[in-house]
Image (tube, rainbow, N blue to C red):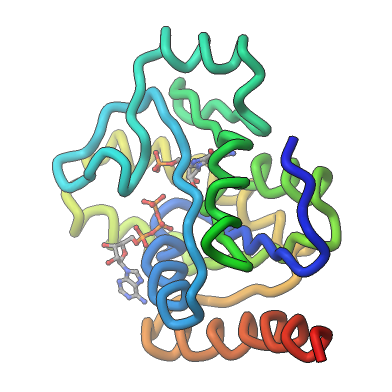
Length: 195
Ligand SMILES: Nc1ncnc2c1ncn2[C@@H]1O[C@H](COP(=O)(O)OP(=O)(O)OP(=O)(O)O)[C@@H](O)[C@H]1O
Ligand SMILES: Nc1nc2c(ncn2[C@@H]2O[C@H](COP(=O)(O)O)[C@@H](O)[C@H]2O)c(=O)[nH]1
């Protein structure tokens, strides 16, 4: 496992599927100069997804081989598909950025917190169930896919009590503004510590 240096920070975005975690994390991330660590998954790519950008899409056999070689620091199964993060990718990202972010479900967030403790800031992004269903319908998900994602809603929302910050994402610009301001405090705190 990669040992973090004193001022290195990991921001973990969690919350229910479709809440806008990816959208707000990318927007705040680019403003604040944070890099995303991309997960590996055995889930097939959606029409709009790009390999290496949204996920590293790999076969179940490739995933199992990487797991057997102890390459993942965290693995999760969602809707029968495997997801994981490689320790080497975290180390690589820290070579070019003092802080990184990941988008994970609650089990992934929990594992990162256990592994890296005070270096991890957990941020929960949410919207109400009907808003999420509407967003998923708009992006072309079938009723079955929507139902299967929403079946995790309560479980993901219940994690809010263990998160450092919680944002309801209704107005996108508003969420990104508040989020960036909050995360900037952690980054500035580290800069001040350097003085
Ligand atoms: N505040 C918002 N208002 C309306 N639509 C939004 C808002 N935030 C995000 N969206 C849209 O909702 C959809 C889901 O957003 P996003 O992919 O960022 O969610 P996510 O939580 O990362 O979910 P996923 O697990 O699908 O990656 C996208 O089409 C995005 O453009
Ligand atoms: N614990 C982990 N969760 C992950 C990882 N990569 C993504 N995710 C989360 O899984 C669900 C499903 O993702 P989807 O893209 O298929 O909708 C979602 O909550 C992701 O944030 C990971 O490496 N570990």
